[in-house]
Image (cartoon, rainbow over all chains, first blue to last red; front, side, top):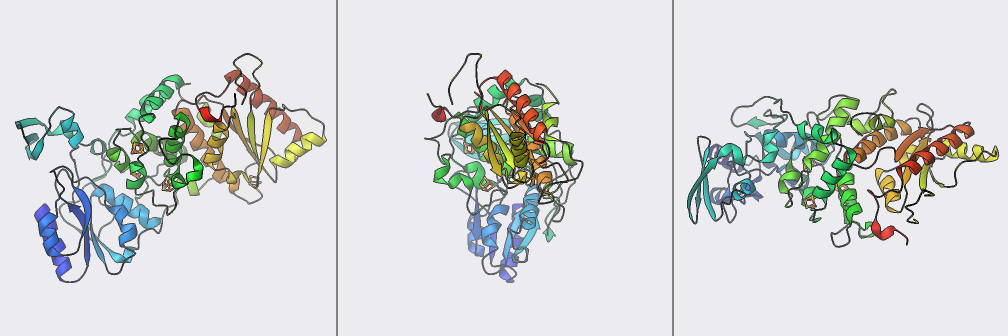
Length: 323
Length: 148
Ligand code: SF4
Ligand code: SF4
Ligand code: SF4
Ligand code: FES
């Protein structure tokens, strides 16, 4: 796959259709692959990587990149195409300035899950028919591929590209995963249990803002959380209220726009299950206002900028489920 | 907020009232000399749609024990559709608060028209009674904002 991608990127650069390529470059270790912009074939040959450890959704970079001169080439996995559509819909991406090539997605690996098994000093990771062969400083280790699959890929919502100019590889279908299982479990707990669960999780937050910075729905030029007068701009000043507030407000700001791409949970250094907040909104929207998948198209009205005369009253949420 | 664990707990209630209906409704209940609890502090907003979810959280942070949002009846919004948007927003926000384990019924939405002075007073009575039952807001408070 990597060869096909590199080949196509170099072709499009060479014939002048694009003057930059957004992709992923290798880092210091095999597992710290980061998004990057390439301008020449040499740079691509030297650094471009696409494999099971390449997880980052690069669609958000297009907000800046498509404002520059010339066309940019971007490679999008199926889940990233939803973010792309959503950004186009919000007029954050200049569609004329980008050429989209859809590429197959995951399942991707989460190196933290490998490290959690006590495997350190990782030099190389290869997939041998469902078994990971991990070369380390201390010898070779193995573990099942399935045990290291990234949380965001466990509940993959779609293998279908909702937007592309060209495809490399096969297009898939919308998948039917049970992504609301954990949300339901929480809903069925008592209010005190839920409170304890979330206090436990949210108190770990160090307010690094990584979740906001990575989020393709969080593209505000001026974010409320950067306002020093707000009192929520750093951890030092934060108490339990602010930890709650940051997460409620951020989740609310992306409600109806979050495509459930899973990037926020993936980057959280504290492993806070942020997707459980977003999925709660998605689940509520689906059940109260009709099925809606953000990023599926660029024309439908978002649930929070729409209404019907006979929407339910707010009291409904105090009447259903466990107390 | 006075920290008061005993039974004569007097809650602080914040009521966001839209200018065109509910605020006028509150006025009417005053001119009709109806009583409603002094716990209720009204904040006038141009339309229920002006109520940002952050306002609700802020009110709790600064010591409210209950927050209620009042607006024109659906269909009667001065700006035609503001309360329809507000309704969706508040529904989702309240659901999220519930999901995070904040006690139910600390938040409410009620539609009160300019002619419903009596409904305004009744609503505030019943909401205050509910909050008294729930006790002081502990799960969504800012310790630094608590006045000792
Ligand atoms: S909130 Fe998380 S899952 Fe939703 S779009 Fe943002 S990064 Fe993706
Ligand atoms: S948290 Fe809210 S204000 Fe900040 S970038 Fe995200 S959507 Fe914008
Ligand atoms: S990425 Fe995690 S630790 Fe960082 S601000 Fe977000 S939730 Fe908090
Ligand atoms: S003006 Fe009263 S709800 Fe809009």
